Image (cartoon, one colour):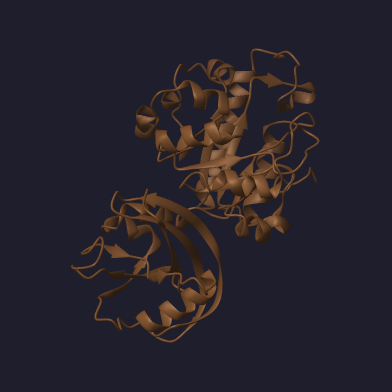
Length: 345
């Protein structure tokens, strides 16, 4: 097996939300492709030190502020690399190709129009995702749901998982309780909630992921999620569904994003093999909603997330106060119900 080459990679983002990319020389490994600038981490350097040196040499920029974005391990066949990717949010100077390379500033949404090395695709995906992922919690009725979601969106949430499971509890609260379905009006309630979520997310430029059980789909009168005539951006799979499907090609035709809940290495590897866009790994900490679940802890979370080259959100007893720790452990960011779902006012 080839020795792994550790590479520090800079995703430099300016005030216009543009990213600096450069063209690899034809004679270089993966020559002729665009890349995020950076270089090899020497044995006596930290990732941050290597990045500061490389970016000064390549572009003439001084790095002022950065944070971890994603770690990616990739085997090209002739070369194995581990990319330590940092998001640069503060820098001084004007980017110039000091090694004769072409340099461009490209809007994040336009990065898919350029040819990058295969290992860089996960970086592009990570860049397109926010660092907070809201999973909707309990609510009293559709009006209460709408109020809570709008409050969360007003606080800056840009990615929402609408989690509608198969039971409607007391006071019409939709949750994971074992209360039997109360009435034949549940389907119209579900439809109204999805419609409200779609409209609110669209008005706040947020993306909506649907997590619907088979029972929820039955109540909506559909046999497939694609039959729902309401706009949404993605589909989130629970771990049981993830491990039971053979392909997500059909889902990809219905939604721009496909994600899943994972709890162990096997589920993570399955998600990567299926080509999912991102995953949620839980529980990091003990939670009151799932007291029987063994908490991973940050050390185990880091080990597991390093097994795959796709964005991984940390979930389980977390909030915005855990973001720095999550980033340092290789997470895309934090997913949360209680931390992001506003209480009833």
